[in-house]
Image (cartoon, rainbow, N blue to C red; front, side):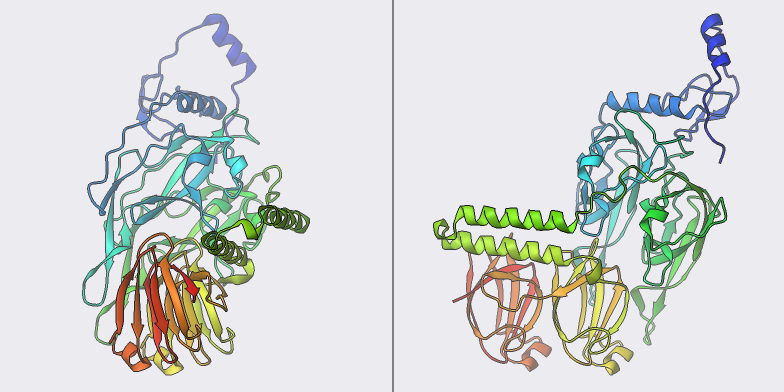
Length: 526
């Protein structure tokens, strides 16, 4: 990487004294936006030509001023669920862009799809997206996909060829780079060499394009696998990074502080290189929807340069003392309200909120479940669990026996949402997490005034027999009731109903199977 540097004081004095206009007749490439330009200024972003490579701080100062005075591009409306248009993020505070998922990614919803933000700091240092207060200090000065760029969705289909209403199989773009700098323009070090590179849109799940990593902090993209490798996702494929540091040291990819100490200065596979995927087929010659057989690139080598850790790195993580103080204040607040002053509906609502908060706090590093195969009884204790996507919907299979697992005879073949899915895991079952990491946390033990998640419940085992009132939490949910296990296996429903938020009376008897098909509900035992 060629480092940015200041013009010498002598050159500045000459320019001020003689005020000689300089004109560049030949074509040059703007180091800020990558546009081919001629003359004194880049016609795309306005950056001034500098024959002495580039004056990084001048460029960034110019982009900062432009961003603060930016007139937002009017974005076209989405005509249907298949077509969306990229928003204009330049000039916006980073805290106002998207949301931070439980898994620690900055995301934006586009219909049924999710676009991930990769934050590129002008000085190469890591930006902690879990720290909302710090995000408010940054402004977006560039993005690698132009506003109003069309983004197309392809939706998954079930075994009968019917399209799922909201499960995206492929989208043209799944990431967007946001080039950012502090509002005050202060940098922690020299500016890094970064060029916003627009990627070719992915036309389908078989074709992906290699991303630009140069200029990005190593912790700001990809993930560390259970096997101890730094990886990135390309649709259904996974690419391993080979990390080469400028000082010859080894990077411990399990240590976030080490990852945050490096910025990428070179990659051995050029951005926009086409990556072709092929998929495995079953014994009938049918293609699996998500099991990749071959891919054009399996590794990408990244050359790294050391950068300073941002001030207070990791300080947003609360201490045990802070947690105790917060808990005490919450208890005092509850006592101040007084349960006796609350209506029954308010009490149930409060209990539901408390359940959600408990579930959220259970989602930590100790409860992460990674892609892989797990035997119930040896790898995981038998019991009732809630499986939820860590960052987004994940795909998991459950097999009733080892033999079913070997024959690909799934008992549950499902897309697991971030909101959670109930799993009753018995001795001898096999759980396979195919795509994505998730959280596996204990399920509620008493279904009375609590959340009931999507999933299958065997009455007398997973939920007690009795009379209940079930209601959708945010919207109408779909439930099935089967009189026997055999009816469940044959899809012979006794009750097939839509349950609204206003409530539905339900009697569950020993041996029945109760299935929450779509949406989480709130259940009260009468």
